[in-house]
Length: 218
Image 1: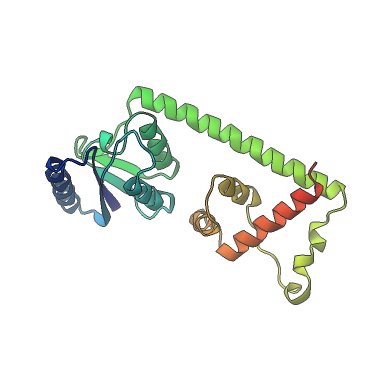
Image 2: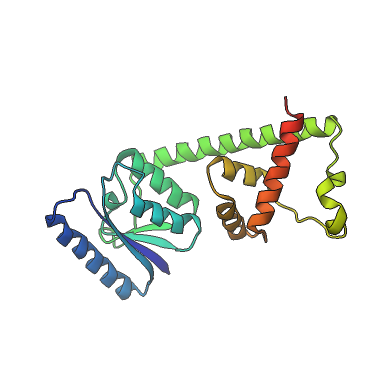
């Protein structure tokens, strides 16, 4: 199992340095005992109520790229508190990455309230995705009704005329782009979902989509 170790304290006091070092040492020892492969060890001094933490953003990068199987911490409060914790747990859950703690000696078990909130968040996100996809479909229907013919797309002519275009999930590309992901991040995400696609292809298809929608959507 590949893991990233995350250690956090909430203040800049020098006394907290020993706490960070203790977390690092204990978690490294646990990983070795369990036979885990340590991909990275990230430490920082930040408030758990803040999502915009450099260290946690690095952890989330590993999570969203599915480069690790689990995040290892001393206890669940290390990853965050309040709404920040819920948002981070949701990201872990969405990308099927475990949160493992020394306190639980294994995978962290969600509290009933946390499980309920995460279920609600997942349902809302699913309906938002459906609404977003419906909007994309409506725009494409209007484009076709107004004369757009995908099979006659100019980008397929010329030197590329003899090559078939890859089937790509344009709805997912647009959704991820709207969430703020770069084209490179989107390509990595889609490859993790089984699509053989490059950053250049993601960029090109997204721009084609925007051109069509901007031309025909009213």
